[in-house]
Image (cartoon, rainbow, N blue to C red):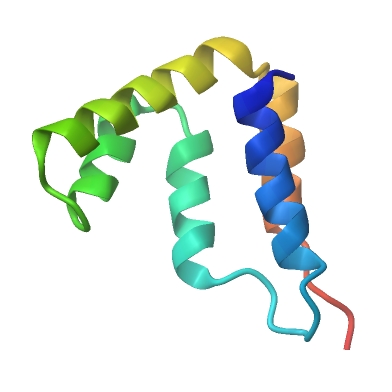
Length: 89
């Protein structure tokens, strides 16, 4: 797993260990689902809802493409399994 994958994992781990039993923020969870999904276009369209300028959209496309090229399907499945994690009460 390369730097981009490690950063995603680190972000998810920090969210899960930040205290409280609130789980992952729904907006972040939705973004990660698009980010780890198969479509660059869907991810860019998701980002476009929040920031519709060419530089941001190009960076989102480059980041998604780079991540897709670097992460294996196993890496992505492992990250997706973290999204399904529910903190115990």
